[in-house]
Figure 1 (cartoon, rainbow, N blue to C red):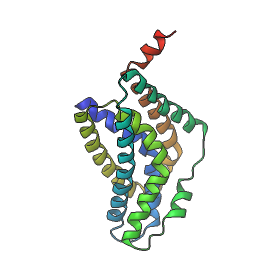
Figure 2: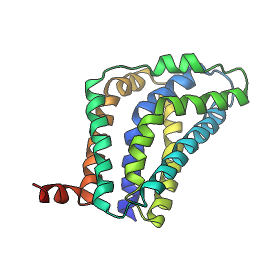
Figure 3: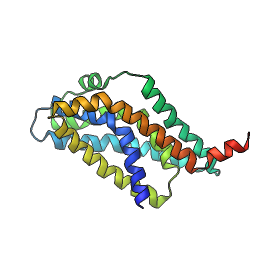
Length: 204
């Protein structure tokens, strides 16, 4: 169980380091009282959509009988990690400014959900699908609960860290390197856990 929780924590962090910076930007843009509640609800909505999509895709892929084939999906986060290193673009602030209107609590919730889906969609699904297909039903439940607690923690961190410019600047500067490292480590774990390395070597 501890291993499953740690794997869930790692998977969530790998997709959310950059999003933590976006949360800081969002809280900086919204000056209303109870902003945390609205942003948090929007985060839950957007994350639920992404996780549900990843669960659906992983269920379909889970019908594949040979685990080593599923292990090939581990190369997706590896490639994504390499691309994060190569690609130095940062459009988080631009995405927030383009989408966030902050005209009312319902609108804030919807806007934050859309920002979550737009900025995290490809990364989250690309990481979660290979990860989910390696889990049993009980492990998956534990991971989803872990995701909920991590999402709550990151939202709280985004709220408070956004008030500390030095921390926000550090995450903005080094966040992509942390993300890239965790992507690659998680990908290698998925490939190894499914015996894909051994199977590919047997073909040589």
